[in-house]
Image (cartoon, rainbow, N blue to C red; front, side):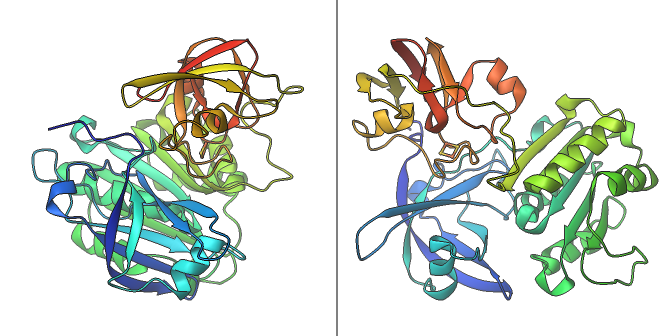
Length: 367
Ligand code: FES
């Protein structure tokens, strides 16, 4: 069978739309038998949904994490995929998802992507994992925890989640179900920022200080094999600092940021001065081409003018869908909230944020 195409879209039928809270829904998408291998996903990956607005015809793409468990590596690919969609104020796609999408509709869906993953088969049999999530950051972690606990009978998972109120908390039932199914191996701590709760934990934000005090009381921090941080930028950064203060090595920490406050968030890679132009050679699905990069244009936009199938979703340095390997030449990235430092050190860049600093730049989307 041919390898799944990088960034390929296929039409998938919506099997169900379930309301989770006042401002969030879960979409279940049916995967036809002939596409199941293409949609085989690792726990923690996301799907990009694409919509062309009826008037004006502008294309909108949004990434949503898969919350359903991953299929076993030796079994068939998934027959269904479920994603969580939280309504964003003024958000074009999320408003469309909440108001218009219904069972039976057909959506344009990219094959799974993303590196915020935990492969159960690669995890130690009795590994201890933990996640700190805020709001819709629960979505990929639900898939990670469910997949790990099902595949590794001795593994343990501690989930620390924060939300505003119980009524605004996504996937309450699914998380409660994990607790019922794995009472000895799944630990859940919920912190509500705007509501008192029965657990005895006081309300308030889950910040660095609070996590630094809470985590050692919950689990043996030094024995945790992997930490998964997911949610708004402020929460992820606070959790990262708390873990660093507790002596956790950076290589054990995996992050995915869902929202970036435009003004306050410094990117992981600082922007430098004015963009230059040059030529980009890009390899995508085994085919290469060389094209000019116009002044101020990103490598992604230069490639997209010639290869409409180049992978992207947010174009904002957050989702990581446009990740490519820099084969030769130099680039500067405007912002990077998606790649870990190990990835940038290994030579990966975000094409949507990269501008050439040398006349010739070569990137490879296939690596
Ligand atoms: S398209 Fe999202 S990071 Fe480049």
